[in-house]
Image 1 (cartoon, rainbow, N blue to C red):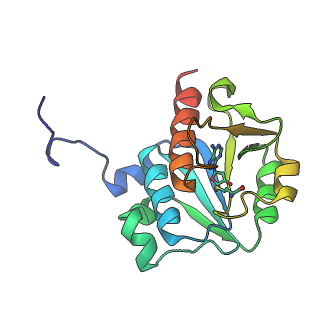
Image 2 (image 1 turned 90 degrees about the horizontal axis):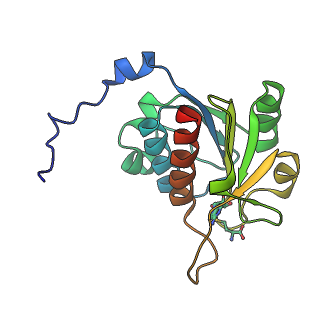
Length: 177
Ligand code: SAH
């Protein structure tokens, strides 16, 4: 095996990406404190051609040096919008018939492997604050809560890591189901 160099990895140009068909998955960040986490989610959303990122509450917005450190330009390619509160964003998504999925460690959650979206189903994935998780009022109006199993000692995963796992898992099911 030989690693590919940058000229061999044929990614879209930012211009082509803008025109390209998107995965109908909107990632909602509910009061994310760390700009590094926000930037990392942008980078993942670029990789999996997500429709948009909704930045809510205290979540930082581009341009910001610390978001840029982990987004590495993805804030220029991924469509984003800012909402003062998460409830407003989620209500808009509900009115547009997006399936509201909470990514959370919660009672009666569904194992991430067991959730099966329909092909190209309009989906909003909500990620919670690093300390408090997703606001309970938001969780109450979600259609489903999916959870990533953990086998170690730590209570939770880093939010951008859990987002990466969930965005990929949902993307492959939405594309290939
Ligand atoms: N101490 C917080 C943990 C928040 S972790 C709490 O008690 O809720 C930050 C966010 O990462 C969570 O809100 C959730 O969206 C996501 N997350 C982390 N680990 C997860 C897991 N195992 N399954 C699903 N979501 C997870």
